[in-house]
Image 1 (cartoon, rainbow, N blue to C red):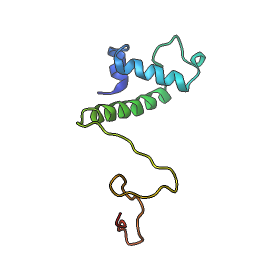
Image 2: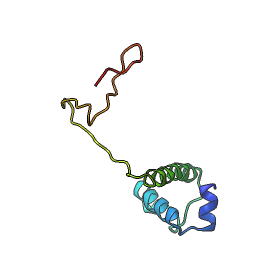
Image 3: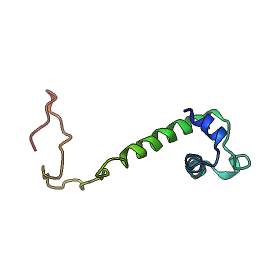
Length: 97
């Protein structure tokens, strides 16, 4: 469903509340009329991106176990048990960990 249509029908749904909150964190509240969902081209594009993030979160948190993020500091020792190399050789092969 198109996010603009959804917010026209259910403006206060969880998705609508998330969009309002995130939009107001980017755009100053004085630029948004009466606290409603704007009908601008920019907001339409913003909703498209918000929908993609919303769906990605739904997918990610439906997995068991849920995804996790691991980040190493620059120059940290490589441990293949915990890390995956993102370096590629010129021939496209990934070096052994």
